[in-house]
Image 1 (tube, rainbow, N blue to C red):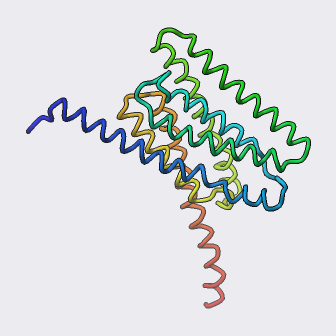
Image 2: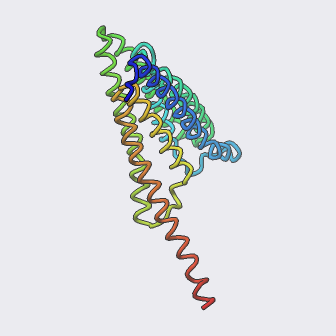
Length: 238
């Protein structure tokens, strides 16, 4: 059996890393643009109605911290992490600004305060981490913050999963959103593995597992819903 040359093996790993990272960027963009229909409605009605702006505030903070982790100031080999989270931060910032512009006065003040707080936290994290002279320690510190932020973001669908199980309905769990989340997490799980970066593959591994659970629940309860619709028709024909 022929053994792969170490240099060829290293080149293959680099290709696989960039391929999985590029795929993760593509699936992430699908997630970033998914709320556009909601914000078109907000702009059209000039009202935020019953929508909450908190997911976009938290999404902005998460993208900013992960973007900083992927930057050359922290890690030298995660440019695809920086690029996707830079784009994500831009999307989330636009969503937050649109929300603030069309919100009632009380929500406008609250969301504006949260936006200032998010920017303040990011500046504190970025400036504070630059004070750590040891580059390895700086990467570990920001990596832990980034990983915790990602894990808490991936844990948010647990509420939806619980709702689906309780109501036995997938009405509140859109299929394409669950699929995009799974594909993005799986891509960045592989990216983290190929890059030997636990701060990427651990949180995205959790995200992949939760994505699989969502897709299995969707398959199970959507099939049960179809069976319920068919039963009366079959009975009426018998």
